Amino acid sequence: MKKASCLGSLDMDRRKFLKSMVIASTGALLPWRVAHGALKNLIENVSTKVCLTGVQNGSEDRVLIEAVKNSARAATDFSWLSRGDSVFIKPALNSGNPYPATTNPEGIRAVVELLKEKGAGKVIVSDMSGVEHVKLSRENLKGSSRELMKKSGMAKAALEAGAELYFPEEEGWNAFFEDEPVDSTHWNKGIMMPTILRETDHIILMPRCSRHILLGSTLGMKNAVGYWRTDSRLEYHKYASTIQEKTADANTVKTLRDKQRLVLTVGTKILTTFGPDKGFVMRPETGLVIASENIVAHDMVSLAWLLKNRFGMSEEEVKGSKDPYKKQFIVSTANRVVVKLLGGFGDALGAQKLVRNDLNSIWDDRVLNRAYEVFGGVPKVDLVDIEDSVPRDMKKQLSEMVSKPN
Image (cartoon, rainbow, N blue to C red):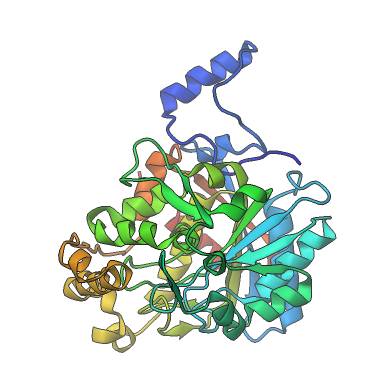
């Protein structure tokens, strides 16, 4: 098994980085491991590849499957994958609702097939759904992520492609271990992650592109919630004054630093209002598959794609209760409801206020702004159009949206 990291150093500022490069050039051993060219992608103003494949609205499944495979091949050379290695695919399964409320099943099929073609051994598709649908406690379990994955269509696609399904809640409270985020974290405790990740060689993250009633968007970094045990989810929502920063910090746990190789989103449909389980489904004439080894760069482009599609909506489509993230009272109240579901009335009464902020550009997003701090800088996103499949004006607009302001 080859080791690689698509996250790189977490707390290295520019001065430390340059100093380390001097040390490295003299042959000294570095105190951190750099593999697969990952660290350089997180240093400010260094080019970071994000691959795009355009997919026409109404295309057959086989067209989307090939687009996903092409995007993945362009985003990574798979040098990290040795024959027989195990791969954990983490989709978005907050509910059992169909794509784009959850990950596209044909996207899952494509990635599983590609991994098998590349010689992977066991491929596992796994997630634990939101507390509105599934709740694990020390004593019992309510709901079933397995049944929700069947309902979403992901289970069928994954199994037909040769993957296995796994749901940590079925093994109970002790099927998790404590993983540690970056030292400067906003978390009070370590984060409880599924133990199966310790036994898996690689991780591929497959989120969706969606609005979210609490955070404004749910993309790659927000998708980490599906790993966590109930107590970690409770801390996340109860101490909500830094929920955005916790979202970024959670992606710095050692398991993800060491094993996450690729982030890939099928964005042929986008949930542009409400979220995460329902909302207005935008179907652009040319949809996108977005793929990168770098989760920060991926989320910059995915958020730009969400915002671009929201900008095309009428005022009628985003007004009032149709887009509740715009209202602070709704956001803070909805979060207290989630805290109550996770911990009870006492925790809900003691919960911190979740403060929303407008998302008029990607630079307004507190999750990304924290990610730039903990992942070593702002990636300079290099949009790679696979086979000239993305309209030129669309690529130009997205490139402008993810370019760091002067």
